[in-house]
Length: 112
Image (cartoon, rainbow, N blue to C red):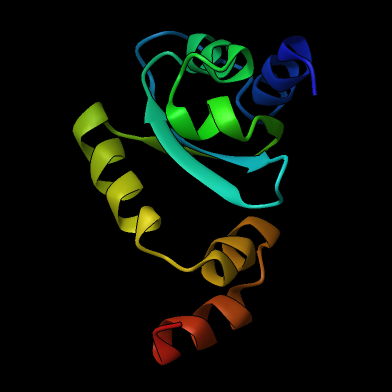
């Protein structure tokens, strides 16, 4: 996925995308896993991920798709949500991204 495609996808998910708005975002990586991050400058952060300059994970395993955005009230709330999601299993993240709330609830109860 190109940098511009990542940003276009983000704009379609959040048309009023602007710097200063706190987001939690989900990226599909080339390996198939899901990366969760947060930012107050989504366009720049996506550019950084695309260039391999955002973090070690996406430098080694580049993003191929933006899967989900969650708008947060502020950056502190976004960091808390990111920390929560990073503890989730890959199955729970997949269920959330796919909108499969039944599976998400089952996985939450089983602690998988």
